[in-house]
Length: 450
Ligand SMILES: *Cc1c(COP(=O)(O)O)cnc(C)c1O
Image (cartoon, rainbow, N blue to C red; front, top):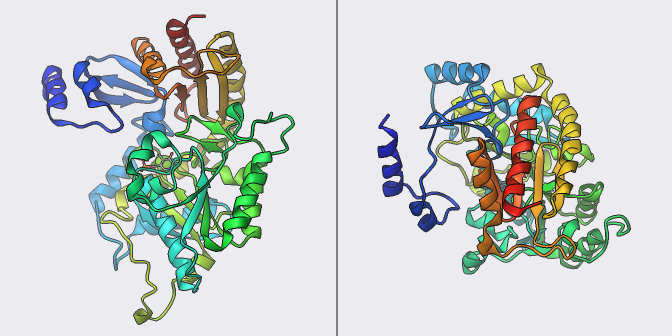
């Protein structure tokens, strides 16, 4: 490896970082990570940090987990890649079987890709083509939710609802319908969660009924809207949305890219309320955070909609070069084995309770407006004024200032605007979790005052 000064210089000279204003980046010293150890990252100066957002929401068992490295290594010795276009490979077959076993009921086929955005594109294209082939040609659009995030490719952006990320691309996107999301802290229908009786669901139902003949599917991030700022949905919201979708004859697409693989305290968020999607997208945690892999799970009904004689051209004409990569699939299988042998879901449920208790203390900080948590997904929304819930000006970069304070104190986290996000690895030890919370508390305090 080059020395750290050279790396820092070359980074600025050659690398364009995602979701980053590069003008700011070029004016500051980059933090360059060299190694990972359990729930810690270590930079080129040898400084150790807690990996407080699981290296962008992917890490499950921590870095350097022996079983995952062994699986990776053993499969790499045998076969690093072979295509799924016209061929099979053992790890992709075994993983598909396993995914169907643990997924919500009704899903029976696995279509692989290599990131969350593509898993969503695939679901959209499958749903659209399914209806076209059924002769329902007028079904050309989708209903998704305000503040939703489904990835950065153009189809995923078309159903996305975060204006800040999506506005500039508008002329390139296809038109979709957006229902209000249950952001209870800033309620779209101006009611209180204690007494609203899920009034936002009524708005959703009205929209579905009105537009159902033109819709292919409803697309949702079940249980929590992640990138919007960890907006946790009230109980029964997901189930109500699913029921209405099915009653109106539409397909239901669950984007479990962030929530899947134990994040919410269930293997998949849909399982908590017995929701059975027609299509389900998974990515982030599937390999435990070691290699890029994604999958779109489909129901038998959808799959059968593509079966026909060759020259009817009902084939799903989609595939990526690295679809079903055997090394990634082998690591994913090892990851799922560890969920069982280490009873990880039970651990997450138990630790979520303790996390909840400790988060309550953050109310002592006068600029903490809202604390949202679902399992191991946490968002702490900072506001200028708690009474009026007035947000900070974007130029204040308040979230960014907090994470820089945390960094000084040995913690790496990433904000979403003014929301401080905590997404610890599921296997994090109790003491490390406590330290993560303590540093986050101190860092908010240091930036916003008591
Ligand atoms: C991260 C994310 C995606 C996009 O996944 P990428 O791997 O970054 O393309 C899609 N949907 C949700 C809910 C996500 O959190």
